[in-house]
Length: 405
Image 1 (spheres, rainbow, N blue to C red):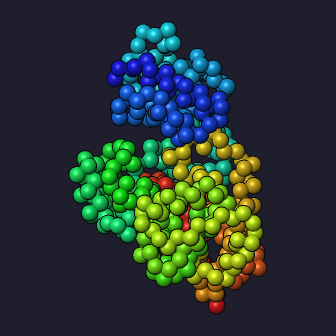
Image 2 (cartoon, rainbow, N blue to C red):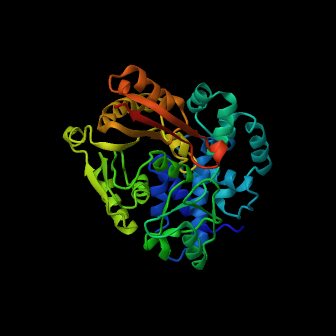
């Protein structure tokens, strides 16, 4: 592979924004890729994948390069040098790469790879928390799986097409996909590509949605004609899936505290041909109180640490703090207690997170059922933990509860 100056410099600029200005990696990459219209697909993928790689392995590379934050430009080039050397990429004769100690880089990599917090490039606190919650053996496998690049998974929108038809339509657009055993509407792309440019996407034939995330809406056991409340709908990935499962019949009330996310949901719903969604911004407690006792089904896709989706958001490893998780656990407990009141007697709800930590998952549900007045009105029907190390997809948890009549 030959390194091109403009691509390497764009990568360094993006890393500076992420590491030193605390910007989100996906947003920075999106902006960076707009810099030069002459860049082709290969150039763009070099920038995106290199930035994500260096963000993912920041701690390991910084240790090998002997640099500390905040990283100046010279430090960022040293991180890049480590990345390139470990991939066997010949470094050009630029002043930024003068005197690269290739042999030392490989030697340090070998010795640091024996220590998990460096090998998996995670903060000390995260490693300790993972061991405490999941045990040494499970955490070891799970964090290794969460450091792999996430595959691109599509969900066929059954309001407009079938999985088999979508597959052949995509093939005509030179995008090859495979069905995934055990996932009803999921297709996995053989190669990464910009699927948002396809006619199939513009026609609303699919959404990009991880396979584990696709399990959540099905877990809720919705049926056409029901009144369903999606309480933390966001931009609506699971809401749209619910609409498809309900065949556009009945009503889905999609609430969120962020109005701008619901605007995005409206756009996506229009493209998907989902007509039974009623977005409502939570601008006061009245919005939720009005819904008490009215839902046949309620989905609580709770705010969480996101530890199950690190393969998608590697910069979360550096942005997350232990205090944030402690506060989040309190917030989750309040959310489940408040939003469970929306379920009518005999109705069901799903509590779900994209975390693999029991403290955010089964312990939350256990606490709700045992220690709250509202929780005593429910019973747990079933729950499921999806570990990335077992599925190859995102880490998720979901619990189906029923309100006693």
